[in-house]
Image 1 (cartoon, rainbow, N blue to C red):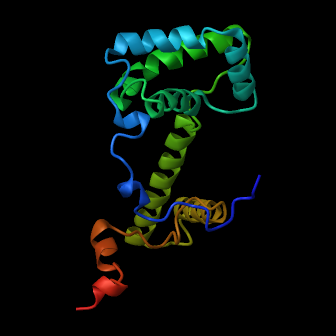
Image 2 (cartoon, rainbow, N blue to C red; image 1 turned 180 degrees about the vertical axis):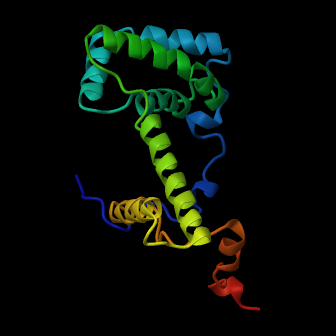
Length: 190
């Protein structure tokens, strides 16, 4: 079997020269009703071998959301149903897989992001911004222990890389718009 080289790929625009409606997703879907799509996936996923494999993935730390998305997108690519139908049945697939995997004693993460950590990070950034603004407006007074403590907290927060470039500068939307770069490239030339 020959090894694929860098020139063994389709050229740009080659897909436009093939016969239209040649791919499964370009054909009318096999299932039009979302109830039929949900029934198809529930019957197909109700298999111990499939659930064991998905449980192993979840045990390895893979969140359930990309597994569900890959499952229904595969059906779209095979021409079984439309993307809309896949999106409609995704919560059904998600809850079925979650219950089945948790029944095996495996902890399931729904998504890869932690909403509590995201909220905590946003609150820290808000505090840093407001404290910086307060110190700028009121001025730093070495004899004021409260301002001294705020200043120390800001310095420590900056060392921990809290997402702010400089604690003494608070940029508003007006300043951000002024800092836009000049257009570059062929289309920027007048």
